[in-house]
Length: 349
Ligand code: ATP
Ligand code: MG
Image (cartoon, rainbow, N blue to C red):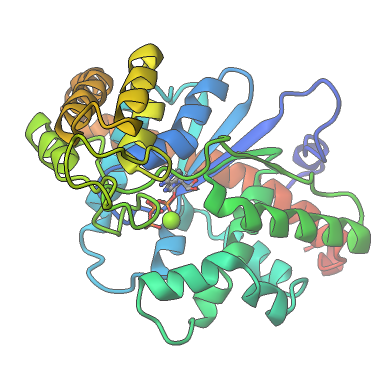
């Protein structure tokens, strides 16, 4: 690397420069679900003009909970990029890239893993959740390191803002600790990124058991057709204590209303349904039918754009290739700076 490229290296965000966003998604399924949209995609679309945006397809992260049946992942990756484009992410304004095409991130991960104790990594709440969701009695070394790898993703491109769901908050906190620790030890290389989390928390799944999740069998996907949306919504968990439509029902903790709150733009009608639900003057079927209408109105334009992009697979591959090249340039610059700060650039090599 030449001295000239080094001089263009971006330190912690200087006043007046455009701040950066980094977010990622694991290619564990073919498509995003409404929870991913609400938790992160909506914020990314909203902020892509204001921030310089990096969107990572985190295939290394996927390996922490899935090490088999990997032959379909290539197809998942393309479909996720099509989802990005169909919800309105613009590949000209943003950098969409594949984690495993940026080997530098594993080097940064190694350095960062020297800055985090094992008990600190074990205290991250998502570790227990991942173990429970995947039926593991002990985490692998890789799963324990997941949040440290995520810190490397974020800091590799010097992300300032990370739009994520609430489940990721503890990871961003760890990222901030790592940035602080590194800067204390070696000099000011990294910004301390901020999480950007929607106020409503996590969108619940159709089963009412917890958050909507790609690998949890309780998700409504952006790729679902009208039939699938209808079947999933009409079968949704509601208030289990309510037997008849004339029984007073619970709106709080009821996933049907949680989805209305996010996806039904007619707030007056949602408020009216809540009143009637609480006083036993509306049945679950009517509330669900209206939810189908609201979700369909949201999905129809996404489906139309999706069909257009799906017809151009070469364009999708080109977006991933160009984005990964650009992200790798950033990675090389950051690593150069990191090695210099750590005095690992022995003999100028
Ligand atoms: P997996 O089940 O494989 O973990 P996931 O559905 O949790 O998949 P991720 O790829 O882990 O999705 O997360 C992508 C982004 O979506 C993250 O920013 C995460 O916080 C957000 N997210 C995931 N599920 C929800 C949800 N139910 N509500 C809000 N945000 C969510
Ligand atoms: Mg997840």
